[in-house]
Amino acid sequence: MRQLCVDVGGTFTDLLVLDEGRDLTQFKAATTPTDPTDGFFNAIAKAAEAGGVDPAEFLAQVDLIVHGTTLATNVLLTLSGATVGMLTTEGFRDVIEMRRGIRKVEGSVFDTFNDPVEPLVPRWRRLGVPERAVYTGEIIERLDESALKAGVKQLLDEEVDAIAVCFLHSYANSENEARATELVEAMAPGVYVTSSSEVLPTWREFERFSTTVVSAYVGPAVAGYIESLGERLTEERFGGRLLMMLSSGLVQEAQKAARRGVDLLASGPAAAPSAARFVAGEASGRHLLEVDMGGTSFDVSLLRDGEIGTTTEAWVGEHRVATKMVDVSSVGAGGGSIAWVDTLGLLRVGPQSAGADPGPAAYGTGDEPTVTDADVILGLVPADYFLGGEIELDVGRATDAVGRLGAALELDPEDAAQAIHVTVNSVMANQITEVCTRRGFDVRDCTMVAGGGAAGVHAAEIGRDMGIRQLVVPNASALMSAFGMFTMDLGQEYVSFPQPARLNTTPQRSNRWWTIWPPKPTRTSSAWAFQRPSWCSNARSRFAMPGNTTSWRSKWIPPRSMTPSSRSSPRRFTFAMRPSMAMRCAGAKWSS
Image (cartoon, rainbow, N blue to C red; front, side, top):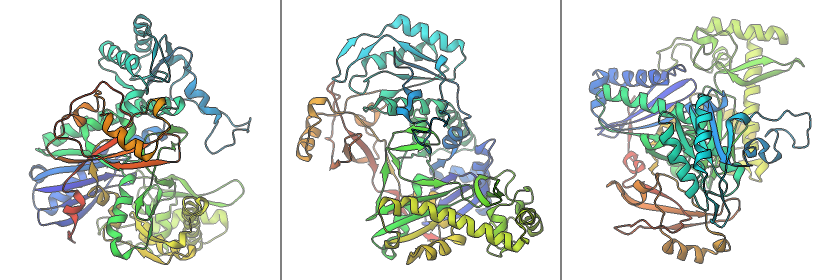
């Protein structure tokens, strides 16, 4: 049986096929922004054609698909998500708008001329409900169910697509919030409903509320996409498992992932650091710098001592996301990034991108000058063998587009192309500086691992200019994220918060605490924590103090039979597969 990894990017959809003989074959198809499933199945069709079978017969021989997508990220960045309503503790509906005084992420909190960010949920759709829990977990005011039902009716009259339930201190006691969620689901069966105790059960109200609202905002699009993809796969005789790549660096069954849309933010790029660590092997030094230059963005991740960095301090656009994510920093500098001249007459590249539609001018459909057009003019990208010869690039059209830009700069097309090439390299080098140097890390100590369809063209010059001594460009560089999905563990990240009496702890106390407090049964965790699938043979746990800089890790092997407990369970854990996909990939051979 075959296994597939599919990464839907902004410009291309990447497909990597691993067959029973451990042969790896790669395919690319243009991403279809209007319906990403079309690009997904176009890539499948290419693989089937290469195997001499029809797509249905090909998929019938596949037992596992791991899928990463930029859908959730694009929905959030383009503000094209659901109409969201919010139910919160009375008197606290403005928490997500106050934003801890942060007007804009890139601006100063003291800049009074900086317009505040419009929240994803306007004030008239944020409704307060009488209820109250305190930080100790004590319920001092029971949920007013009649007020809640009136609020739900008001939101349904507003024709909301999703409702976020965010109550104060629900991380300490989710009783009121769980009851509210139950009532909302009963009254609004066709509405996407999520709660803060389900998405992020930890302290700091703005972070928890914001993350929950983001999950509700992207959730309907994510759930609809997963449902549509699943139906089409079934129609095409696929009978295996569909797993989704999560931003935390894990993969999860598709139907579970649909419940938490926020976990699919940056789901594709999250796999690339794992691929870099796997392919670098003995060629790498102590530290790795993974860079991935695709069609729309340039992603950078630093692996100190080979450890993939994670963060809970992410902002996606202007919206706070506090779930655990692989620490990948991005800038709008890819092959499709558009070159333009600003009001001062200076050349700029990005962050705007031609994307997959219309694409660079060289593709024969676009008119804007892009990085790819410049590389074609400079001879860095062969016009007669792009995408394995499937696309013949239009050098004349690329020259015309870059020439129009060059006229504004008083440069001929070749000089303008060189200027674009140098400028985008500077943008990417600045992003590397942001990730490494400004955090006190010397980039010259790193081995650079270059991925993405355009990275091989630019990585050597960037590394040379920054003093990086070793560069690795693997066979899978053009499909780095897709390859990384083969190395992922399957599981779910869970976070619970310790009671105040146990906040002052030590590693020794935390280890004892792991034994004393088993996971509490919740709607999302019960299937994982107490009814482990047969393929889950191990569990890994992490104890972390949210908001603190110190964390401890411990290994936790659950007993053979686990019983739910009503006691509090502050813990974070994942289930992992054995053997891992990385072990299956070891020794894989590349097919041309």
